[in-house]
Image (tube, rainbow, N blue to C red):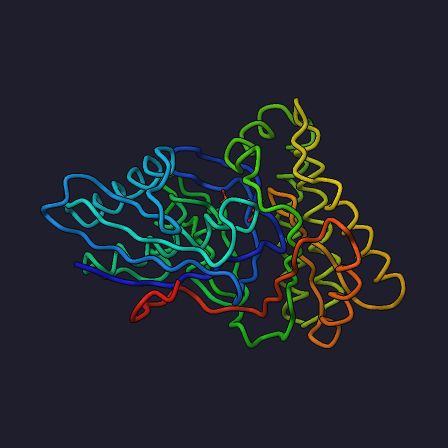
Length: 329
Ligand code: PMV
């Protein structure tokens, strides 16, 4: 009745933003992501008949009522699938700041899904596991798999085909993602609220949805060709289009701060000077920079001259969710 799991975070190269069904958490668009070796969540889950409620210890402290509620609600989905009514004791730690746009919900819900299903002895395929993780957080569906991953938006009303699949394992392409940490404060607008406001008020939202499939197809052919420059151009485009769509909501959703914009300009300046480097940004101020391994040192040195940059984490492509003996965090 107990399992310990590690799940790695992922960063979308082609972004997910918007839901076609809020209750089942079905995405309005597909996405393509890279699972990250350097950022992960470790979660242990123990179910027991004597627990009277779900207890969630997050980074060593009892989770906030909001997180408790969201987690218990998600565990209800798992309890329904596995036909149990036992409550759980959960310990979960991230090796990076929680909820600052570093995809903690992706690794968090992927780890929780895998640990809970394993603890309850459920036999599900990775595809099914991805569909379950999606109900916790859309991006979590992708963290079930390592390497380069595609999330299908699906078309079935019950969400059975809204699942992620692995496109290529982590050794397909030797690239690096630099996570440029600018602020470790929690973000003001969570991704779910941001998506709802964008869907309801941004005049650009239909265009965002209508152009998503083309972006995915182009990214898949760039990945197949191992064309790093094309992958970078497409990633930057998807990021800017997502933020443009959110910025046009009323009121506009602005995840960037001064440091974010400085890093975006610096990346473009470095590129203009001849080093292939590209940025992407999620629902927070951090900038993620794609580059080839041989340029990591140079790019870090240049970005570290920007006063707002707190620290830079370098990540290679990482593995899918897996069991561990003992949590290290
Ligand atoms: O699934 P969520 O709630 O973590 O939303 C993810 C939204 C973005 O990170 C901005 C884009 C993405 O595809 O990961």
